[in-house]
Image (tube, rainbow, N blue to C red; front, top):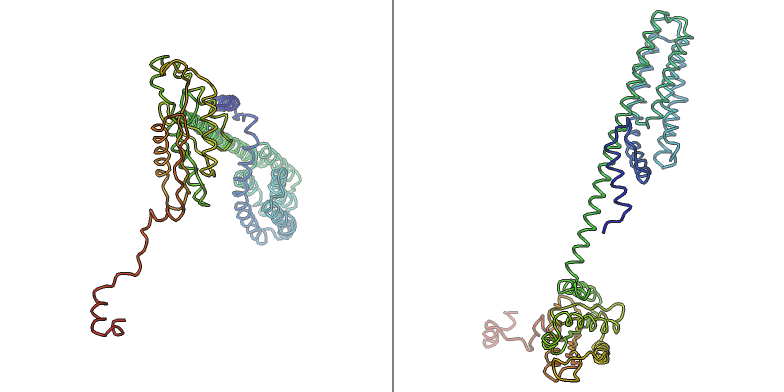
Length: 437
């Protein structure tokens, strides 16, 4: 069954994706995850773009030395003493993961600096021909706004500061014609609005992608829960709630593999309700089902927490006992046998006064390397067969295979002395034994 919070979150994601708002809203449980993912992606991108754009921006200072030598040195000092150290400090703190919530604030301060430097150059220039920075400033705004990924709120602040600095620098400039100021300001405003619009579009796209991925993960989780439920249902007996034959095979194989690590003991008890067909014929199948449930409840009350009981088929059950010797398994089987008999379930299908009993076959093997669990099942089944033909309502044990005997079943024993080969016999007969060696 899928938890209710996951269903509610799935509905919130669907509602967010269908929202008509200008910025896709994020459900509260996903906001922290979105912020974490975006910070990680933006951090990797911004490190590369910061280095690249700062190098290009520093190279533009060379042009000032030829066209505007009076402001070139000031521009170079601002770059080398303020902008570049701040960028290096940002990269170092970001690499060490020290920025956290101050990431966008520090990135915003770096983004404003190029506009501030250009504004100082514009306000201090004395000749119109020197004002190449008038046309570079909108380009800088677009570069810092798009190449350096910031949250939309900080992108708006960056654009507002850049436009304000540009307007103030032109107002303070003594050489920018008043007739050109409005047109230049419109270029800067257009660049600012373009940066804001594209940043919001990027944010919309990132949020939609994140929500779609989150929705996909939730659907995968739901399918995993459903598949797990179907798997458990496919391996569970509906009548008794025990693992069925498929579940028994799976659990026994896993326990056997774990025991093979240390060559531990694994015991198996096969249980068969005596004369159960007669019980069904006399009482009916519904009463037979109830009888099996009571037998299971009685048997499980005798088991330990690590033991596993499964329905092997029909009225036959199996109990897996990890790390249990043959004597301990036989003692546990005897308690189960006595408990079923002590329940005094009437079985008039046999004769008056008869009660429901069960027969038990017990086997124990060492889980050695390359061994097969099939031998354990075979021995337990043979022991059960002996119990059924020895009078029923009893426990019969099979012999425990020793480690040496088990290995011997896999690898034939070597014979001694080894057989003499034909060339060796000829050499010995001719006294040329040394030459053949």
